[in-house]
Amino acid sequence: MNNLDLSKIHNVHFIGIGGIGVSAIARMMVQIGKNVTGQDMQGGEIVDELVKLGIDIKIGQSYENIPLDTDLIVYTIAIDTYDKELAKKIKEPFKNIGKIIPSLSYPQMLGLITKDKYTIAVCGTHGKTTTTGMVAEILNGVERKPSVIIGSLLAGNPNHSNGKATNYIHGDSDIFIVEACEYRRSFLNINPKVLVITNIDEDHLDYYKDIQDIRNAFHEMVMKVPKDGYIICNPDDINIKEVVNDANAKIINWQEFYNGKLKLKVPGIHNKKDAAAAIAAAGTFGISKKDGEKYVCNFPGTWRRFEYKGKLKNGVILYDDYAHHPTEIKATIEGFREIYPINDGWKIHIVFQPHLFSRTKLLLDDFAKSFNNVDEVLLLPIYYAREVDDGIISSQILSNEINKYSNNSKAFDNFDTLEVYLEAKLPNMGEKYIIVTMGAGEAFKIGDNILKI
Image (cartoon, rainbow, N blue to C red; front, side, top):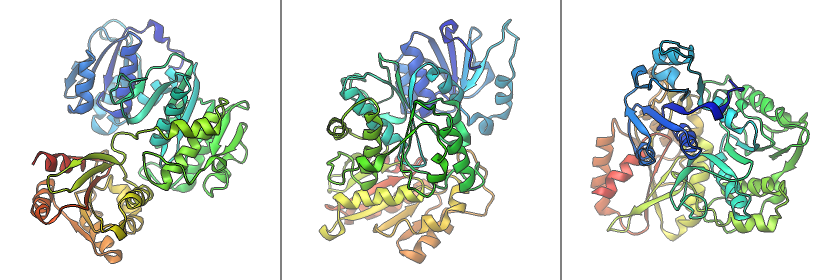
């Protein structure tokens, strides 16, 4: 399928078009003049915005939703979990309408569209979204005009997205910046000239056997970077050292670009590290550290990363954050404490929805130790996503473990009971109280509902 000629494709149908990655490619196809249709299990903000672009989207997943004149099907990798029958049909070339319709997964399509580009791939267990956005901010700032696909929504910038939040930026150059996810080794579909590795940590253990298996995948990615390419990383990191020790490309240590005094719009040491990696990547284009720092300080952040949602009449401030791994949770809380310190009387209440049974089970103790620096942790039921509940782990079990370390957690059976609990507490809250909805699932809905009330 790598030989597929996109110029001969006119009608593209997307399955799972509401997904953050798939929707970015759908936007791109509209931008380059393709007729785009799609389907998704549910609507939402992303689907609504795609409809405004003129895309015909069917809610509900069905083989019958695929138009007869479709030339190419692009599908989410989650389809194997949600609908095995549909997955089987679209992966087997079918001829019932007189032609064979090729189908590509989202990662395969990503590889196809970046094949002939000067590709900057940003990978890593944590921080890849922010780093991708920061690289884009710098290169746009110096008028390099890259195309960008990111696993979130970049805050609107009138210079490159018509002032609207977007997960795709269309650029006029041959530079393509892409967030490259390691899940199921998806990033191996990409052939980067510049590879950024933010970090390597235990995650996606529903797929990977262990940390060594994860390192092996990153090593495969490293070996795809050509001799005249660049790898931006921390080569001193214990999990990265062996991954890059036989790389063909030039290694650039982002630690040499770190500036602890940098005044970013997004708080936290972890974001300063991401900024250093972005500045190092920009340096491969001859962009000075000074200019890199200038533009990265303009980066406004992304959707669901330290996102300010609003303030209640009694002064309570609401935020939402995508953190769903213990390392991310700790870093995010440190960021909040940087601007809302305990010594100044700030109270932080976290509404957390664990993401995946496997992740919660395998990293249980790490999760339990992640919430020491907040006043209360309210747990929603685990977001199952692509998994089936085997009854071994639950939010109540996680809450019990958290309480062994910080004694500040409560678990709830559903969204409604947690909302009732919060609504009862709100009258006793006020100035210097922060509520943060957190997780990769649907915890943000709690904050949205509180704001409506």
